[in-house]
Length: 112
Length: 115
Image (cartoon, rainbow over all chains, first blue to last red; front, side, top):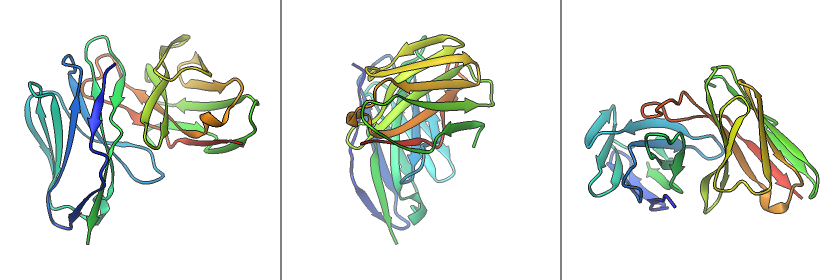
């Protein structure tokens, strides 16, 4: 059974701080990694994907991947109250697999 | 919303009745998925499709069936609804082939309540 684990939170950070969200996965064959943001009562929306070891930056968001340790993280710099949402980590196991396995999500609350 | 529509948005039904949820896409994507989302369980895959009339089961497929007679439509049917099927149901589409850089695009969801 492929598993994706996230701390459920809630994670509370003050406005302007860096929020750090972590995810571990069990399948060493996993190849692609995604972060989705989900506001309460809404559908998930893709904010980042990464497939190579290291960091990938997009605006205030940085995804970090370490395949040897089987973890992926999302950093949100200069956190804003509008970043308050649940963040879902999702993993694709690569060739021949067209499905994503999702973690249960981490709820982030940015305090003004 | 990226060419994916779910209907209905909300439904209340009685235990034992059949229910069909519809997912419609205008993107001509090959891959379509049905997930349910429940507190404490996250998103769990029910069924998916990799082409017209090509479908397969996910991890929580018991009590559900699907059909895909056209590229644009993927139907999820609860043959005899039970209270344990009360959930939010999301359809997703993918450009697929390798998935690597694309991930999913989700529909707006259907909130189903079985009483």
